Length: 358
Image (cartoon, rainbow, N blue to C red; front, top):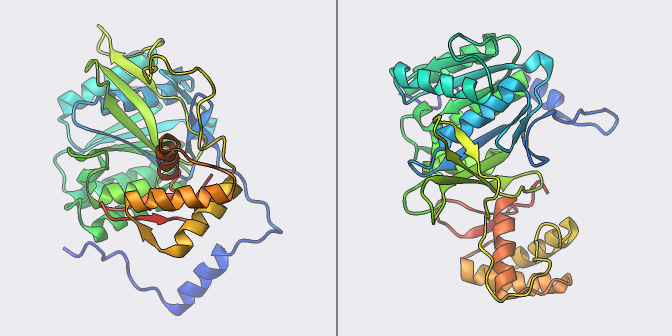
């Protein structure tokens, strides 16, 4: 099968038309994308964009996404998720590619119970597709038809996106499905949230499709088991365009529903250390300082290994008045990766991404 068959050459006339409609002008007014999903006031989802949840097996990714859907169903708050869907965008499409209809039904009931809605009848705001028996190509076609022919659609969940491709390491297939997500969200002005497994050996999302998701998604949520208590799952932002949010945690209660851990401490405080304002590379350094320092560092060479990156950043940030200890350097690199100001693809060296969103 030719996975790139849709990437056809366009005629010169078509290219001219697309060129003209793609031009931006300062004389025109462009509306800000409506914000429909938030955590603690931080925007994680807007109409016209897509996001993702990643995590290792048994990290309870589906339970976490059930909370997102439940918040959207009630247009309110579930766990730390706050949904604000416009009245003409209240329809939710949930696509499951892995489970049997029996297990999918349990997921539907869980989402409805979380939203405080009856779980013994269909809900007008939720449509659920069980696509386990179909091929990746058929799944793409089915989802596309549902997206374009469902009135008032606002939110789409794809659990899991890896089943929309034959080979998760295929650059062609990965580019195609991510391009589809970008096309669907833009043309239908919806938000799509996908679920993908992490690699077993590291924190990267699995395969080439994971790399594409990390580079293109508006937000990537990381769902992971608490290191000291495997019954607790922690949610944090691995990548986020908006301001980062404080991680939160949940456990599964006796009703088999995710329940917020109100008093959960995301980081254990080190005994004996002075209590004061912690260094925050996002808040304490301006966008201008970041940009000048990064451009200075990467003007010397295009890519760095981790150790040489640290040395270059210490020197360049000192030039903009930000001295970095080893501890601050680690925090800085974490923020730079989270905001996609620097990127590392498939284990290769770090490179600067000047078109970042701060």
